[in-house]
Length: 273
Ligand code: HPA
Image (cartoon, rainbow, N blue to C red):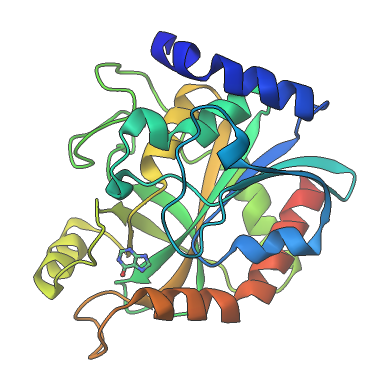
């Protein structure tokens, strides 16, 4: 925490000047889901490249912008693009969006991502509310199978996922008649997709969907006391689940197809918050 302050206080000061309000909700938009910002009233967009010490985005489909926006009378802090461990950054860099949301006094955050479906009930194009992840036990303590944790050495009870925010998300889906699935998101480091054998293992361990992000950000946001929830867009069958080879184009293509449903859900959630 001290280190984060040392490294990022100028960036935070810069943002506080550019954003003269307290956001009601922060949202991280995952792979292919960035288009959402075009459907709401954006008050200000800040390229992360203009922010001191903000790690540059290196992946296609991740814009690297922070937006301040309004929808349904709510103030929004939106991260278009995220920082992945597999890009070569360290965990204290990956959790920067959660830290920024906290420092701007935001109390709620929704993390979205693209994920591969493992459970046969999950098909490309489905949206899945995350009910559990590897790395946080059902007693909400840290566990080992995340590899490296963003709050190493601390044994706090982590309120992730936030039950109250998950309830809002479920209600929003019901209202929009969206068949929102629920399941366990399994983090893998990437950047390569998993092997079919790895997917078999993750399935045995209880994972319903697999992806390369979110959990470190979620752990850190929950640690900082933000109400934290997460939604996966199932963009493909995980390796070995169907005969197809995986590629990033399929991920962005499916995310593109699903974007109307995703936008309706997020808009309804915002109006319910
Ligand atoms: N595996 C890991 N990450 C992913 C996948 C996948 O199949 N799809 C989208 N992100």
